[in-house]
Length: 156
Image 1 (spheres, one colour):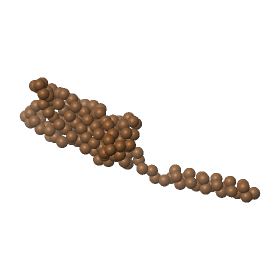
Image 2 (cartoon, rainbow, N blue to C red; image 1 turned 30 degrees about the horizontal axis):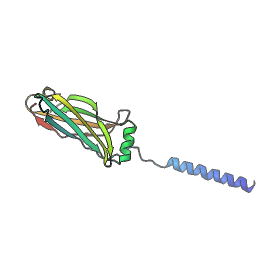
Image 3 (cartoon, rainbow, N blue to C red; image 1 turned 90 degrees about the vertical axis):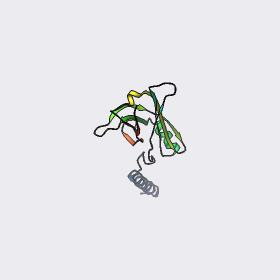
Image 4 (cartoon, helix red, strand yellow; image 1 turned 60 degrees about the vertical axis):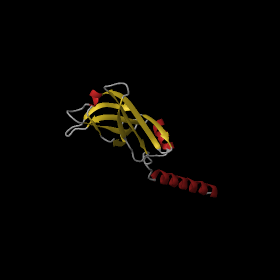
């Protein structure tokens, strides 16, 4: 066997070993850079329109701006549902809705606002308690992160 043949064989063996090592290395999941999620709910009167309120849900998912941009471009959604908080079973009041999303230096921000009749928020007798459930979802619909907003109390 010539020296050139031995050299080519050695290079091929080292190349194959390197490929096995690289493939065998544990890799971080795509969502490893996705941090905690915040969610906020505000309910305010609709000026000049008695009987209506603005429901605004907004928040942030901590990550780099480039990661947030990549998630938006890949089709990840922020899905929001408004719930009536009850002792035994929460009532779905509205949703699911896809929020507007944008990337900033401190992560992925989202927001949604709907003007709704007070009767929609009047979810039970007496004092009403509402909150929003928020999910950052893969394009397949599976949840990547989730959060609940603060509770808003009132008689709507």
